Image (tube, rainbow, N blue to C red; front, top):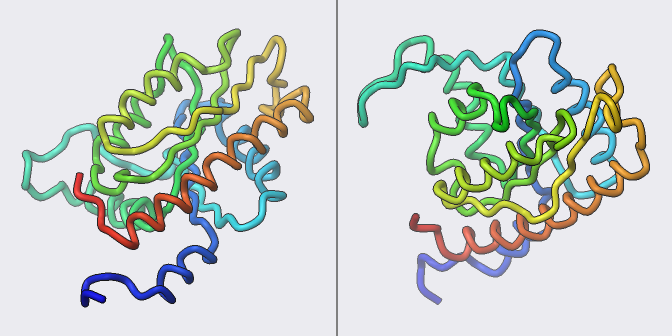
Length: 210
């Protein structure tokens, strides 16, 4: 066995370890539903064993819009924010993005987080929980799929979409039809967990070269 090849025991340990999922709250707007939607999702995910959920709320991540040149040092403000969030993204095996739909797209705060990072997304799966209006945020999700494809991430097919406030999302940000939405969350998490473990094993046996 080559020295660089992981031992079977190391592969087995990765296979049995909990899947680390970073849940990103994408909206920072005042009066947002994003945190309430996230809290509902965390409750729905609690019944799915084998997950370690880490919530990254962008309202508490103060990344500036101004970025340094390639290879340049970030500002002290950016460095402080990156010191908190970057290791958490790097440690994650998978991601769930909670996003509203603003003007047929996703929030600038979410794109900013994505653009400040690169390798942290590589060869990892991404699931979506979206909300907003009659489309339930699905147009934002479709655009995010293109963004994450560029970053060598794998987006799972099924997503959770909350159509409201008129039909599916109550004023407090909790789905009106909990059974249907929890079923959608279960399906998305099942796909995310499968891909998360498969890709983690792949990265363990052979580092991804994106």
